Image (cartoon, rainbow, N blue to C red; front, side, top):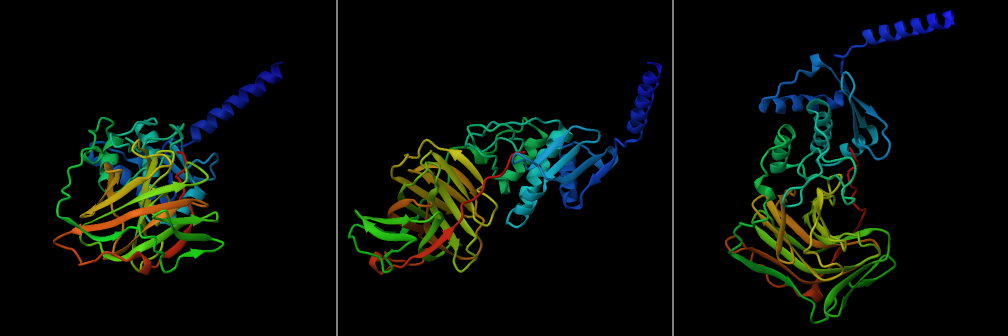
Length: 389
């Protein structure tokens, strides 16, 4: 009994010695994370919060996280943050990687340095209210945040001040001037004339069906179909069409696209919906869509009018003539192709496609004869959503 007591005593002394030797002010941040930690300190200082993490301590390191975790904050001394190695590598190969990495690091530092919990409420327009969203999902919604441009400024403000006022971009009051737009291109299919490259093969078919263009995918890939090309995007424009989709899953996305003429096929702006009343927007060159928002204006399984208005550097989105969202345009260059999205093994019907431009900048287009028009068809993989944090 006495011997056991001595053993326990020495074990306790050893534990105390090890604890005393550990450095609660250790600063160990892997090189790839350093600039984001420094940005966090800089943004904090702008808002009256001073951090000197090299002296107070912080550990940020790579890990192989489980359960689709992108990052994990451990409330130790010092705070220790783990970033999933595979996710970091995946986003590094895409456009917008810098902002996505900053978003992730700021989120985890928000936990560790600011003591913030997850906040899963939304703004008026449906955007997540905070980059601190995460944890248990709300209505199975992914954690994608449109963390760019004017939104980035708001989200950093809110990170350091949870009482930050709701930003102007979140209002659902549409106040942009749309006067002076005149029709430049119109495609209707009432005459049942077939396009030049009407096709029926093992991968897809294109035809005119009951006065609408019909595109059917026969494979497990989505399709981008380009119809109208070489429209000047340095001036403002309005692009709209009636679209209906039949697919195997209500979550399958369909919608409209803009691509830089003669640019990389990855640089494609898209605006899509599904038959589960969800809408998405983004650019194919990014890792994933910017965000997912539920919209009651979407007619499940029915005909939906989708519209994009480009004004200066902003894109404004409409569903059945209701304004639903705005976002900065990522496309560069001077010309664009217009088209639509068909989900894997889905059918999309299209009608009343038109492009309008400001009368002071129009390019003297005439209505296109559909039976003289050719398509460009591109199979694509579906976009991913971001993991948990």
